Structure formats: C-alpha cells, structure tokens
Image 1: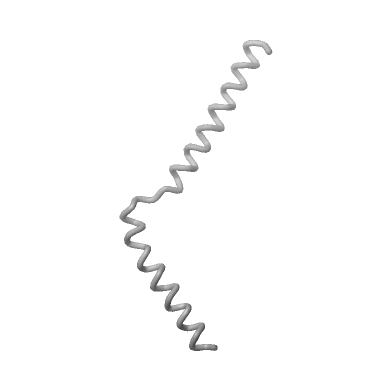
Image 2: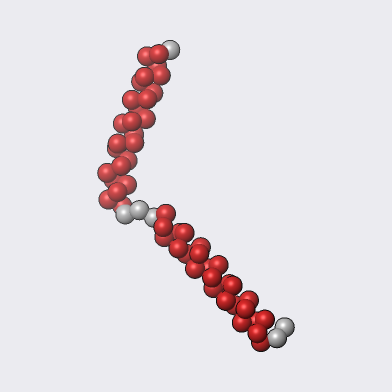
Length: 56
C-alpha cells in the first residue's frame, strides 16, 4: 500500500466513525424527557388495553 492509499483508508475510517457517533448521540434524549413521556405512554397503553378488554 502506498502512503496515499493509507491516507484514503484512514479518512474513510474517520468518516464512518463520525457517522456512528452522530447517530448514537442523535438517539439520546435528556432524562427529563423520559420522565415526562414515560407516564403518558404508560397511561395511553393502559387506555388502549382497557378499550380492547371492553370490546371483547
């Protein structure tokens, strides 16, 4: 491998790593958001389950 090939391989490695890092941090939400949405989601799921049980 020439020096140019090594440089190209390193650049592609860094680009791939930065994409993975960006995706990882894009999925993270602050803990406060989880605290706010958790009970809402649980209540909605419970309401859906109750509707299903009433329909049965």
